[in-house]
Length: 247
Image (cartoon, rainbow, N blue to C red; front, side, top):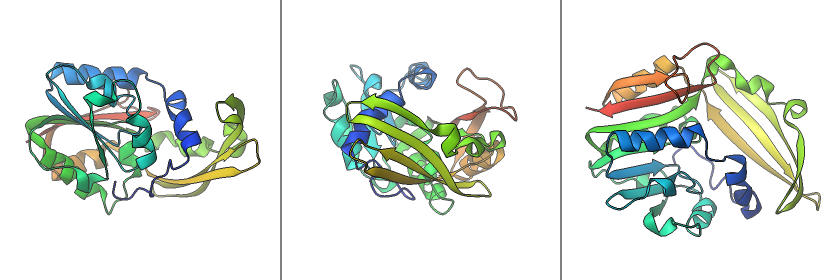
């Protein structure tokens, strides 16, 4: 997608660990319940990654499409049980067809935080173009007020574990932090001593900024909650869970 580094999960050893590190939880329950609530017949999962959530949307009479810019991620997704029930598309927001017939667009795993201020509005426009009038978009984003990045130090994040790829040493180091833009290096040291370092840039947005951007992209009935159970957004809320309707 626009603003995301080319195939950040290009190492297949790490892709195999992704679902382990990002197991299904309250987020998946929330998105599936939303799909059922609005009786979605056509769903787009933008930034679908390994498709762990995407595949669970699939059922008879429902069309499910997963879009992701990582060929490595999608290569893994296509080999998983139930993958044949999903249409997988390699690409960013420019690969999203403006069909205007989607009932639901979801974007999990903080995908929207990877989008720069320059590309974020056009991505929201593309996703709006995919939705029918009355269709719903939903995603989550980390709450900047919680200042989570201040805990992303080597000392606080260092861990070691045995994985299918061997004994792995891991940690995170923040290298830049300025006005909601946070850059960090994720270190993954394999048994042979090689350190797969992945640099990620995240953009933290307040609830009011997210609301204004969605309104500008043609959305209404915008709700921002502080968690997966419709909690009110508070200063210490870790997440902002967003739902909006296309005009």
